[in-house]
Length: 109
Image (cartoon, rainbow, N blue to C red; front, side, top):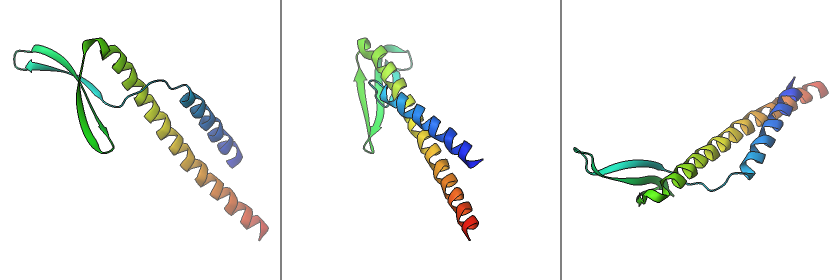
């Protein structure tokens, strides 16, 4: 029973590692449209806001870079998801290995 679960976990981790190797350019943050005169929605411009090394930052973005940044932000979100999933699987794997070891100890005694 545990061997099947461990095998499934190892397969999922392997798939995550393979996908991580193909991750392209990425960037954290949120891209928003701001207005110079917000009430009248006059003078739109783009901003990217993100936190890096526990410091919040906001930068203006030229319109010609919006499409590229949207893709990079999407890639970063996928990267974060994959890493989180890998950690979750690693925890499950560790727990299962400990259970298997306990069962082996009980059989020996």
